[in-house]
Length: 161
Ligand SMILES: [Zn+2]
Image: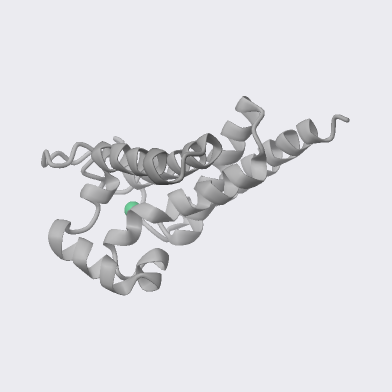
């Protein structure tokens, strides 16, 4: 998936969680976007990889693409690090929600992800799509529509006064 779709996936998922949990949508969405971009740190051409080129190259050399940073292990480690250094539940759940949305979107592509890294097991949906294809554009549009809905609902909750 392209960075654009991942960002939209992170926005949609974190707005949905903010709506369900009656949490502050702004912090949740900010963290959700970061979480949605974080796994592609393993890929130096990605948005986040271009921002942190050295770190990105090191992770890519050590693990390759879509392995460690697309795994449950990485989720657990990130969750642990946030609890340790930035203890804030909204931040944590926003970030993890964004990461999960990234995993799900990448599972919809042919190369899938190594969800159970270090086990060498590729996880993907039975039906997959090509990155940058028309179907991806369609998914992007559906996510954008859902974002409007959840965003409207989440902000609506804040209008009660
Ligand atoms: Zn990815």
